[in-house]
Length: 444
Image (cartoon, rainbow, N blue to C red):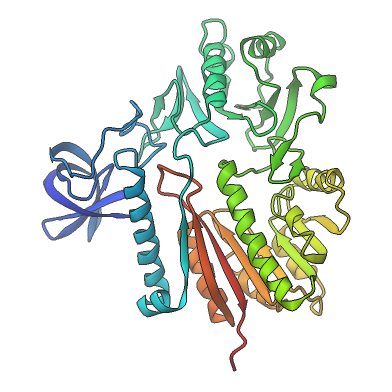
């Protein structure tokens, strides 16, 4: 049996938050490692050309290694980079993106043709306005890295202060002797959010019904406004409201100069500041184009539009806008948000994006198509989008790998990548939000 322990010198970081080094002519990917570390590692998973490992002992720490601000770091899998400074994190995230881009497009293409701008976060702690925590027995927390074991936490250093207060109070009720054997054992996930309202969502097992007294104790023990129930098939309903009359549509989520109605069944970006920065970048790009042309776009299409997070900001630049979203709750919110902001040139359509693209008239012309798909990307939909022959495409993505895969397909079907903006939406983790700005190739 191969040696389970090895000594390595870490020389870089890779996508996924892994430190990279070599031992016995084999690459090792090591959790929570820092370039410059000399480590004794324990192999967790072996492959032909590489291994995954964890740190058994830090023999000589890197000069870049710092003391984490969180006592759970290295055990909890919620963060990757609390062991390095934020400046160092930004450097490596930029380098990793460039490396992955070159794998897909070739080195010359990136260095000479594509401007790239990295946008750091103003706050790299206490920025999340939503977190989801696993529940099992008397543990409430995140999974360990490379494991499904739950690390019980009292607070998360990435979450806003209000969320940590909700976690503390709600966790106290859930883990109390009164409920943890009868109620909590039937709950598998606790999600808390403070975007607009302070909300709690509980994923229950086997369609379990929450007792009235438990609901009352949650409201008494926390400052939450609403409690949602999520069924095993992930359908979400509003289960209870603290004060229906006072709480009904009186609070809004403010994004830049617009107000939004928002509730938990709809997706929302977890970093409000960076979300607004993305909207600014998109708006600035479109404004430059329309000012140069001295006219608005005739038609714009926003795919995976949610409750109108980006859609509502297109109204100044296009005569007509269609927003497409599969979630009926989000579509209804989108319609209400348009009315709330006195916007009349947006049509929200409830549809699966692929089915919408199949049904749309082939001679329908869009000057601009914006898409912000799930982490899995759009795969085969690139051809359906380019068949509509838009002049411009703006692609927003939270997954570097699927983003680059799809971007290459756009480039191969006649679209130039004018620039890429990277936004550190998820500081202290390896994740990024990236936005590509493409235009129809005008060259013969």
